[in-house]
Image (cartoon, rainbow, N blue to C red):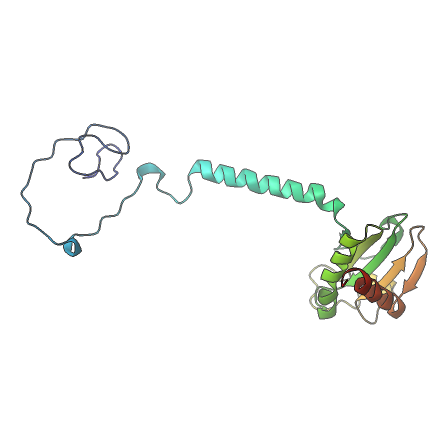
Length: 197
């Protein structure tokens, strides 16, 4: 029978509800025909007022965990071996403000729509993690909401880009050591020496 107080199922032979503990009304004994287990109707058991998928307390806990996760992401993002820079305004960028002094800075100009850029990105991350003397700066050349590689973006025009990924290697004092194909070759050599050992 279902408890009149909490509407949860309790076996007929129990004097109190097994869920809320309330006294159950007496049940008259009615003779029953013997039935096989297969012929019994299926009965759903539910837990009354907290029968939703998530209770209010669960929603609150999930919300707090999500908030802490977001805060930790933004707190520790700066300690990443990469500096990801995206969504620039309609103007050139200042690389001097992004480089780390005393380190070899690898600037990777890329686009989300560039398959070779995606292919080399994990190796750049491994290189930056394996070599504390290297700082990788990844800059998406695309303007916000532009579909395809944005060859007309301010960043693409600033660096006169004709192909990507386009690399610059900048010393810790801010001097550009290599750019373009020679920088790409140097980065690939560094990856081979460090990551593929």
